[in-house]
Image (cartoon, rainbow, N blue to C red):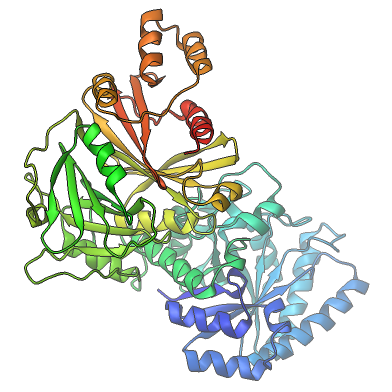
Length: 603
């Protein structure tokens, strides 16, 4: 599949963007006119640079406000168009994007628009150029791809076809099925963008909130399927206007963008009828569960004390490294003091149990995922790790009935693994604002996790945006939280941190036993319990029990959720949960209370 990307997606100069696109593995680019206008290089130099980098120049854009105008205005359109066509000849380009008129259109007549496109086609032919006509979602008269196609049919010119853009179709709620009625050779170009489902005007939505495939709520799989079944054989290109991508490092964003198309290509290749040039990724099933969580710090003694108070067993110290392992049931926590000078405790890595580690590794390589390196002795298990966009490391190891082999590398400890904690329920990671969308795509593409909704939670220091990824069987649950800027600026120990939630057999008993052993449970304000009694009508003795243990409570249509929080110095804190009768949430109603309590306690 030939891939392309619009230079508007990236930060930097035009030359820097071209280098980034080539390094990421794109075959071609769309040249966004403002990038060329601001470039110090001549069109001929840009053409030569693209050729040296192995990039084709696929589309020049945009030609605006060109149809549906008076004859007087159309004379100026022809003047502007001829200048663009001459420029495109210097660039060696043969396709220009012509957007439906949003500003100067005064004639709502398909015959008039078609006639003007026909005359533009005559002019374009003299320069060896074709015109791809696109219905903008906010076009004054033409905002539907079906009407754009009717106008192209009326124009009846070999140099005039349509450009299809997923945002302009799906943001308006238009049915893309009719795309299959357009002959493939008349679809001159395909542009893709995903987007979150928002209630706002389409122009602002388009200019600031587009995303790469796999990061939003559009069904791009179905959309592109219609285009391919129509017979389209050209490039599949990304046109993503997004404030974040325009101010982050171009090479990283380009790799991120290319990964999104590789993930989409894999889905399309498995859904015939499809093009012969589509290829699959190495199939790898979703993880079967958490293998471990790793906490890194210069001094992990406070975390050790917390785990011991929660009933975890110290399984031993690594044979060759300043690393210890603690476990209870299937929950394993690695405490790593290697190369951790001046670091407060934080979640450095998450390990997953997978069915086929070799397939998982191959898939990660095909998606251009950066691999992490850790020194391993010849007698030790070599665990494969990649680096997630937030900088954390992600490991995978073969799932097995018994404990993984790497556990045997920890010696001189307690072989017990019992306790009231039975496993890891979920791992919540705080994301820098600029990588949250990339992180969602990373876990979807590499580890086959799927989005499961999200929510916004009010904290004393700003709104926390939360997005959840999980496996269908809920063996893996990963809430990803975006810290408000004021929280991020406060650094380690701020009110929003990473946390690990442990699944318990009896969280009430654990709270009692843990407190007796010195477990520092987060105090919850009394007002919360007064509200709890009003909301759920719980008996007084139940409320008194929850209040006495600083337990939080939630209930849905199927079951109940009881949980409490404990902390140690650093950026990681701990949650202990009990799900009863199929409860499937995270106690979202309790999150603002927890955030406020942490803030008050300076945690």
